[in-house]
Amino acid sequence: MMERFSNPVLSKELKLRFRAFKSFSGLMFYLAVLCIFVTGFLLIYTQFSGTAFFRPSDSFTMFAALSVIQMALVMFITPGLTAGAISSEREKQTLNILLTTTQSSTQIIIGKLLSSVAFLILMLLAGLPLYSLVFLFGGVSPSQLITIFLFYLVTLIAIGSIGIMFSTITKKTIVSMITTYGAMIFLAGITAFFFFVGITMDQMFLSSGTPAQNLTPFSPISYFWATINPGVLMVTILYPEMATSIESVVGISTPIWVGYLIFYILLTAFCLFVAIRKLRANMKTNR
Image: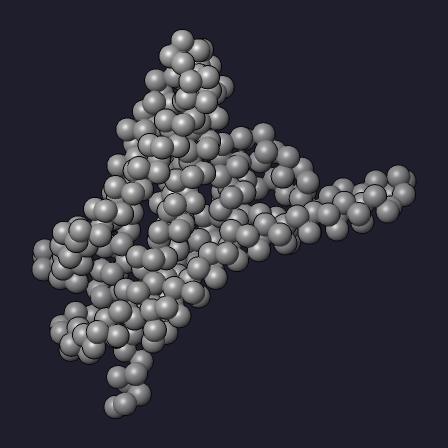
């Protein structure tokens, strides 16, 4: 029974990744950035003295800024860990050897993805002691912290799946990384631009109508761009009143996180499906 669920690819990748010096150096750099930010934040808000008062509202501001920085680091690091998962094997000419083993395409792709996700989860857990300072000063509920980390988990799995897919369908790691970062820019930046453009156009259309028409805002396209943007969801998690404002502007009462969860689960499933199907595509063609 245990052999059915065993994944030698995952075991090998975990050993190689967690024993590599660059993994621990990357983790040290990640924690160093967070420590520098937290230390600088405390020094600025206490006016570089140990006697100034640190209010709970200041603690929430530190939590919000720390969450944004951690999310930015995760979104920057994830493509680098997953975009070369398959293409690097192809460049080292070890992919054909891997494909001749008894491991299925699903085991290979899932093993590559989970090894990268496991390291990213380690990074998130390593930053928890810094978050404990927030609870020391108050102003943040444990539910907000849990929600933020669930948001991290869904996002990094989706980004990792995108990186695995591009790593499978492209031959060069550099091309895979560029396309993965391009997808990240689209999801984080271009969607926000489309959202603001859509909202602006809707406001212009409503203002051009006569008061007697009594037009109500309804913009499903703008709502869609908002639901797939990680920054919008993070803002609504940190500031729930922003979620109410967005819902009133687009005219849709469905919470942002519902659309976000559905979209990224479907995106993850699609990317993994393409990666699994394309992993042995060349072998089938040659036959």
